Length: 292
Image 1 (cartoon, one colour):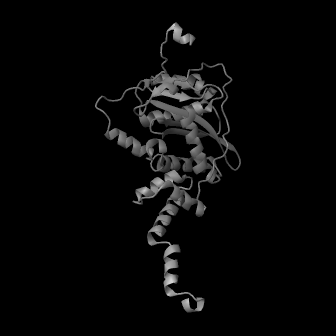
Image 2 (cartoon, helix red, strand yellow):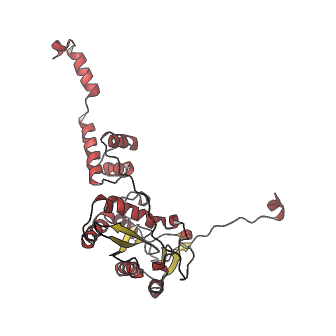
Image 3 (tube, one colour):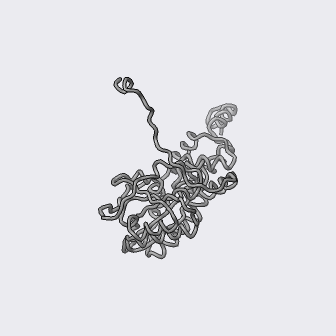
């Protein structure tokens, strides 16, 4: 081949060493591809953490370049659709969650509702999350967007976690969460209600982020023929994938289950305590300083 091409054998081997990928490069690319395909909606940061767990010392720019070259970048999210009706005569509670300093599970729960489109109908999903560990602790599916649906998710969370008095429950100010039945259930476990202000979905950002993840990685990835089929897939996603496998950057790239296990091992002997309020402080100044 060298004689036919009119090049020396030394030049041929030197060129091959420069352009041919090494075995280490191929192994790294395979690990990146496997992580990206196993978790189709992971961005390059989470793929990077998965690859590093396999023992590869690699940077984020290199992983992102490989994902781009192989067309494996994460699928983008859809726009948010609001489903909250805050025009009601129920009591509205102030937003206390914004000032909490979380140090343990069951100090703050966040809740929200969303809709899911099936082949022939719309159904609704209510979820409850532990804000400290991001773990999904309760959910319920139904055909009616009412207080009963939200209450079913809350009861599941209570049965799973058995919270102590002092839990703060945060939601939007929709009729489902402000209803007498829902607030009464919170009072029965001595929980404190907290609500976002109207038109401010970011004040319940942890739950909004979870719903975005659920829709991107499970609901929008396939079509469902019935409510029962959707229920089986949602339960599998929450219990087997989201709570046990999915990495969270806010948790140091651990899953909620791993994070809670690590927190339990390092827990102090003082036991569980409610979250502390951390209100903003303002420095006092004299009349002369204020005038300046």
